[in-house]
Length: 105
Image 1: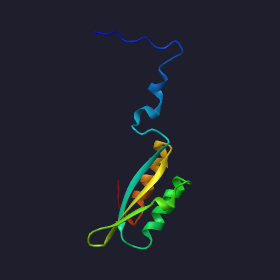
Image 2 (image 1 turned 45 degrees about the vertical axis):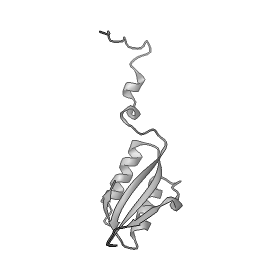
Image 3 (image 1 turned 90 degrees about the vertical axis):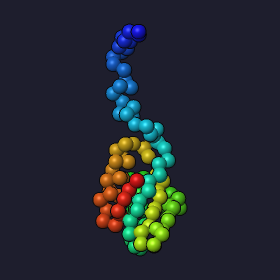
Image 4 (image 1 turned 180 degrees about the vertical axis):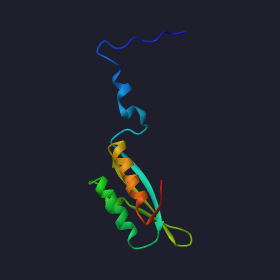
């Protein structure tokens, strides 16, 4: 049986209060996001604009597109540079609430 370790002399363990400790993502990192929506001309520009809003360095050339089997929907994969949990949460919220977007993964 092991005894609990005493607190560090300089105060509580800093990692216990670090919000990054709760995340499995190491920041900054390349983070792919998949978006599905109706296949309309405005979908890709809308997703691109939101990606650029949350990651000004977003590489538009990295966008991957895939049409559904019937051609009614389009899958878009964007890869952003994730810098924080707040950034990812904001981007997911913005994408999810966009009227052309059906699913964000």
